[in-house]
Length: 115
Image (tube, rainbow, N blue to C red; front, side, top):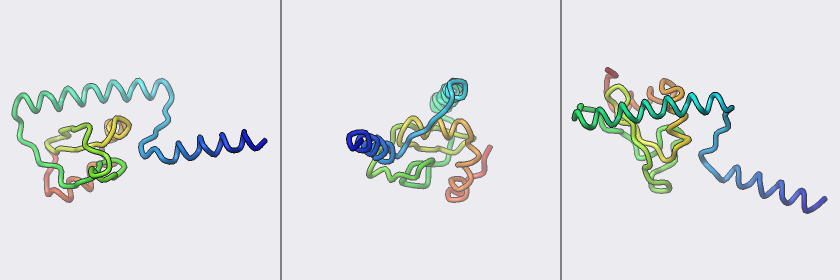
């Protein structure tokens, strides 16, 4: 019994130590990937067209608010003229699934008006 409990405790501690874990069903994950790809295409198109955007005002991830001193910037999005920075792919997927949940405090801090 003790080996099973110690194994479960190890699994639980590993799950808690990861700051960006998400669980999704297969269909939700596929929809999120499609949204993420289109969002990435929009970001690349904005960069190529040299579209003006407002710089990201914080030094932490837009979703889980992990400081970039602990986890460096891995992803970037331009959402309606506002730059948004992320520490990992699950955070990008969370943002792409429901950006309105995260963009409010970013826009308020940057003084930007969404286009």
